[in-house]
Structure formats: C-alpha cells, structure tokens
Length: 185
Image 1 (cartoon, rainbow, N blue to C red):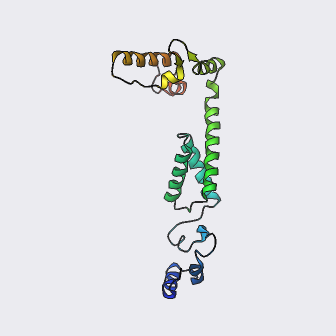
Image 2 (image 1 turned 90 degrees about the vertical axis):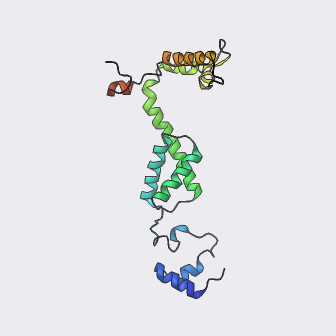
Image 3 (image 1 turned 120 degrees about the vertical axis):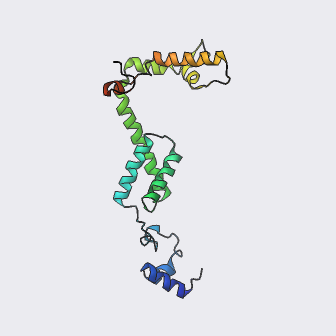
C-alpha cells in the first residue's frame, strides 16, 4: 500500500516518531504491536512483567469464580483493554488462562481439604452411584429440575432439599464461626 509522503510526514510529526517507522509499518511479515506507532501516544503500553503479573492475579481471581476457559480468555482481554495494555499473543493468553485454572483448582482444594473427611468423601462418591430407588445417580437426580408444575414435582424438589440437608450442605462452618447466616443463637 502506497502511503502519501505528506500524510506520513504529518502523522509522524503528530505522533513524534520517525517517518520511516510509519512508512515501513505493516510491510514486515509480522508487525510488532508493542512498537506500533501511536500506541504510546494513545496511552497504551506493552505487556511487561508487571502487567503480566497483574493479569495473572486478575485471571486467578476470575478462575476462582468461573471454570470456562473461553470466558476467562475474554475477561482477560477485557481487563487488558481497561488497563490500556497491548494484549500479548493469543498463545500467551491461553497459557496464562490454563495456569490460572490450575492455580484455582489447587486453591479450591487447599480451601476445602479440611472438609474432605473420609465420611464426606464416601458421601460424595455415593452421589455418583446409581440409586435403585430413583433409577439414576443422586448427582443426576439433584441436577435435574422439575419439568412440570405439579404436587409430585414439588414433593420431589422437597425430597432433594431434605437429601442435601441430610448431607450437611446447608451449613457452612466458616459462616457459623463468623456469625453469618446459619449461626444458631
């Protein structure tokens, strides 16, 4: 693409960059976005060590809330836009999302390890076994919502609530310790 010399000179003057940078921009096999003319002028900065560290922390916090890799990728890109940081390569972003998900998995385990008593593990394992009385696993039963508005559907949902309460899932040790909901007075 031919760039009119007058336009190149004026743009270079406005951006305070050498005109040869603008003339050669886009002619290389791969243009380095971090050195793109105008990025600094527009307030954008390359993703340096500090920016990538902050991105990692952001992704870890989101990975504790969400497990979807595509959502984490999108949220990471939106974060970089809001911070006016030039996005690193998609490969770099994917590796950081994978790392954040691995860290979140470990953090989740660390937070719940004290709850995973042998009895609790047996109860969780039992959720995966087909229960002859309902002809499906308890996990599938719990995750299947009502399909009609009827007394039988309401009774089934109440049975689910009773089952979950029987497992102790309606109590939260940390909330009781901090005086939050579920604390008995």
